[in-house]
Image (tube, rainbow, N blue to C red; front, side):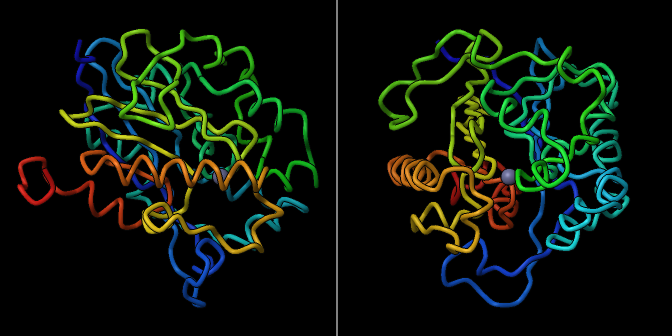
Length: 288
Ligand SMILES: [Zn+2]
């Protein structure tokens, strides 16, 4: 049975700058823009759902004091007014109060900075990922890319664990990610664990997004080129990668899946090329 069709909007909510070679072995020395993307998924029954939030002005205030200020120094952030989440949602006809759910890939600041702007949303993440960040502060939080002040005070009360959802079998065409979690119970949004970058990063498979399959892979790789060429980031980022071995295995898995599925659109959260590709309309025969 075909899962319900959802509408996908791939939004760029701010960007930071750092040298390309950090995220791609052999990349350029100069600083380049790394967009922070998130997705608005409009479901025919459940309404507007977000996958991550990108940046928010709150990032600035939460990185004012040490040691969090180092976060801002390492990755200077720009968030033009027209890229703010609320502004972009309004353009699509969605208010921040309309968002009923947010699927959180992981708790790094550039993925959750907008949570406090969503007063009615319930959150969903993998248990081990939340456990790996919550409760840490100061240097411990900084090392984990986590800014506690970005989360609403009632975060835990509004949190559901993706782990508790029914298992979903995507089938052999999705190897090695055949096993996922049916987040809404209707097959339209399948959570797929992509660990390594963080303790339990949650990727998202949309089997029928505007009529085609899409996989949102968050920070399992930094660019389309990285998964296409199965190319790791610089070893210098190892200290900020939770588990290097698992990161490598997850990246190799996406490489394998993407190589076998030319019909599948894979969207890493910080990839400029993927942003350009997603703007291509469906009827373009070169991208069918
Ligand atoms: Zn991250």
